[in-house]
Length: 255
Image 1: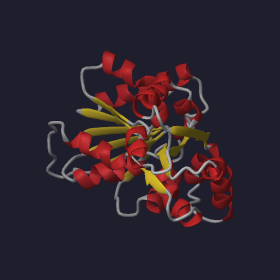
Image 2: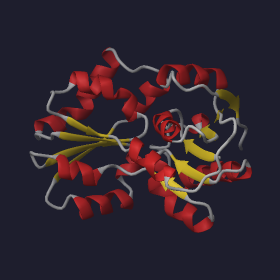
Image 3: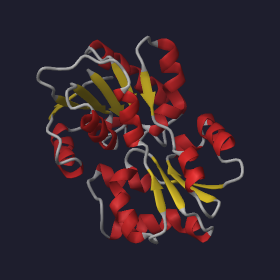
Image 4: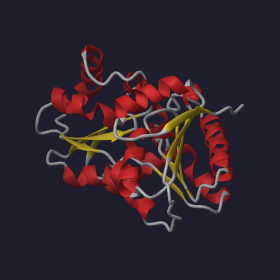
């Protein structure tokens, strides 16, 4: 079984990629909606929640765990790998492909506060974008919009304008979607922004990394969605965000 965890429903963008690559696998997804968003939480809080959710997934039989949350990856992935024996796959902003793709020498990183202040992000920039101008922007409204199933309209357009104005003014031509919630707003971003802007989303790369591990196939593969929030709301959002995925949504009670 593949375990996937996120602060909310943003990880559905990774879930759909994993399911597309590994349709014969059982997947258990945890959305920690009661604590969403992680991006504005303290590092100790994020680390504690990520360990608690990982413990639960391991008890359920996870053979690999995907941290489908950039903030949790930045804060906890190394500690998780040191503490547990099974493999952990984390998210990270696609700085390297963005740096290779830009023609203007300027890229923009749309991400959470936690991701942008993490050492891991700064190491990525230092390693892969030494001669590139990198403009960063926390986007808390993006998470709120996706968590409410709002993917287009005036609120979305206003948030896009607010968060990308400085990047466009600096002639950025590649934007990194540095949070798993953001790919659900990609159609709106593509409509709102100039045609020459390119976008980097690492969901497919995460699915391919998951595919490299030896996993036990299931005779009757299924997807389970567990949430610390309201199951009915998450079930509705699942249909809005990933209508091709069929899954049960049940509550998860963790302290």
